[in-house]
Amino acid sequence: MAAKTSQAPLALEFNAHGAAKGWRANEHLVDALPYVDSVPPELKPHVEALIEEEKRRSTKLPSDYLREMPSVRAPKFDDHPVLKTEYERVRNKEPLAPLDAVRYRLEPPPQARRGDVGAWRAAADNGAAQLEHQHLRILNQELLLKYGDKAWRAQVALDEAAVKGLEAQLAALRKETDALNRERKLQQHAAGSELSKLERQYLSQVRKNADIERACDRLEAAVGAMEAELDGHIRADTGAAAAAAEAAEAAEGQQGAGTGGDAEPTGDGKPAAAADGNGDTDMADGPAAGAEGAAANGTHAPEAES
Image (cartoon, rainbow, N blue to C red; front, side, top):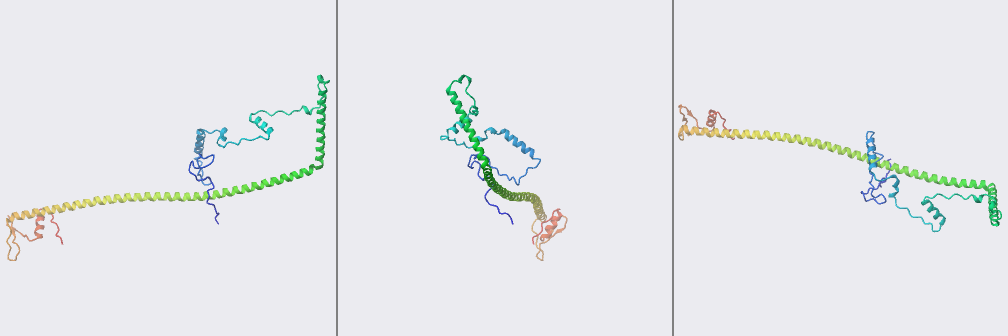
């Protein structure tokens, strides 16, 4: 059973250039099919050269890639003066102040202030503070020895639960990503098959149109040759008919000049034969006489219509 794919586009939005919304509204949309399109090995150097040329012509620098991003909201430290001071220090790139280790040393007043009561009181206060600090360390050690293993196991259990939750989220995201990529791959393969089919149909139609065009050219050439041949026959027939008509007129003219008038009819009602200069008689009885006259003049008489 074929896998069902949704009709919603899974790549980029099919928006016109400049119609996309967001902080990259002016970027060109990509309509490639990475699961279908492949770069032949012989074209890979050319593609890499085009990429390098585009990088050289680009005005963007790696250092200002955040310029396209929206500005970060300014932090507010109204209720946190310490954080505000540290933020200003980091923004001004100032080094962190070193830790004051004087209070961790148990020293008497300097030799020049050995007679100063205030100096001795400050030294005594420092010693009392360090003694209290050591007392707190001892208490923490005792608490650690008494409850440390339980607290450690509890913390490990919490960490394991957090890790399992994150692993479950990661597995779910990977599953969704794989499903999305699989669906995109199926859609792109389907689109690639359809594009290949349409390309084959286009090439087939182009070849058929070329064959039809060549056949039309051959037919036009044949029709032109036949028209030329027909024109030749028509001109030949027209010339022959004109020559026959002229020959018939010439024969009639010679016949009328030889007789000097109309021939008297004979006893059977037919016109008498006219005698020529040699004493021979020509029969002037219809088409036969015309044919004989045309033959005598070297021409052909036109055929009688049926």
